[in-house]
Image (cartoon, rainbow, N blue to C red; front, side):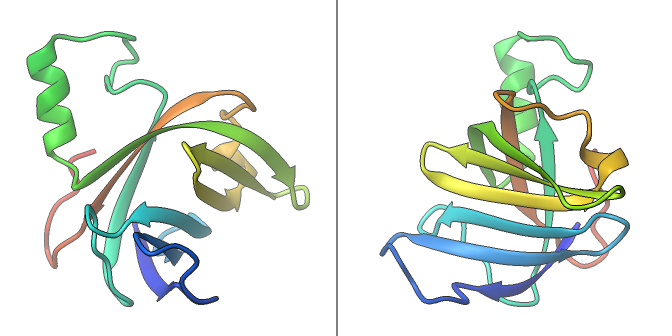
Length: 139
């Protein structure tokens, strides 16, 4: 989970795109992610949950029944499909992973142990939802 520390910190570049900056609540590091602001509205100090999955199936299957897919996607407020285009090693313990979701960018920074399973050119789903107070994680 991440706490939103700023929205459009460097000003608004595109009318319908917000750039969210967040700080991890647990061990995970920092987040920068662009979202379509008419589809997903977020404010400073909101808590958001983000899942990165190489498939939409929790057990790693590359395809699943349509009903199961729709159920999984409905549990999130905003879903994007993207590709890892850059991985930057910051030091021995930390790295940054950069994704593009058709031009909407994301950057996750954190412990190498949390992000090292990702590779350049990996296709990922980025699933996002606002986290309400006292709401349990679904994943």
